[in-house]
Image (cartoon, rainbow, N blue to C red; front, side, top):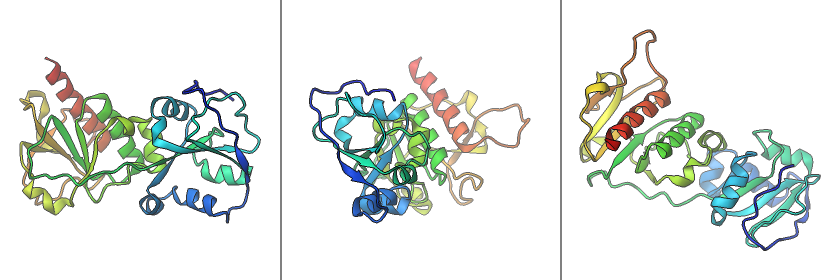
Length: 264
């Protein structure tokens, strides 16, 4: 098993093995696999052979616990003293390791996500989304971090950004973004502009004059935008060979086009 790049000189001996599914800590960690548990405990599980070492080195302050299978090798790993280490029985560890990596897991605290005041004008490119699929939301977070989105505002219909599937698709992009909670669809009418909606029936983005500061609204997968949402609609140009683009793909292309515009 690969070693972590050393984030500091301090080491900590792992605690005794936990193998009971009824252990209070184990029950709490298992709850973090679902959105309800994430909201209740305000903690999350991070998995991945690349994402875990990277997060431990770049963002160690975000984590307080490391979980490893009882037969896993952690000798020689430099782990900050503030991070508690637990060995788990193999069946329990595999229950938590939903990605099946076999690699240690990190437990961190879900950061505060304040409510966005949409009556205030946007700063830079702010994306408002209601993506209910956590994998799609994670992919959007990855694109948003790559292409300079200043804030990602999650409507109440959106998936939890620290759901295991979202974290896996985001590849640690969630740590690079400013995340905020938003209202439901019905409250967007009060949002300050400039504000635009991304939709397949909108005007061609190829000739769009991007303002320096704007909000871009992304609809739900399959459902699109509510019919009564009175916003100027924009569309990513295509050949027309397919009926529509995946919402995350369309959003990624749109924010990339804005990224290129901003660099001119």
